[in-house]
Image 1 (cartoon, rainbow, N blue to C red):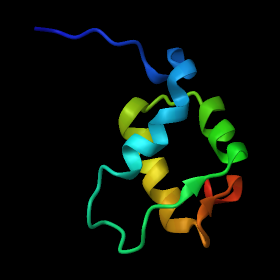
Image 2 (cartoon, rainbow, N blue to C red):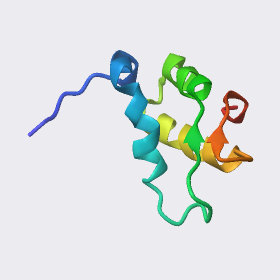
Image 3 (cartoon, helix red, strand yellow):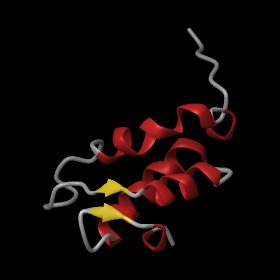
Length: 79
């Protein structure tokens, strides 16, 4: 049965939960606990068009978590 979902760029109202979903999706990838996201970092993610859709977001969240030097991902961590 096909499931028709609009792309991420059309579901911005649900954005607040995406990073937390993906941050737990790769167990063992990072030895440290996953950091949280500063509001400005979440807003930067929300504003992105996400042409790669879910896979691109997943990779961006994982990279940001690896780049974060503290307990929170900052906008600068989202290169």
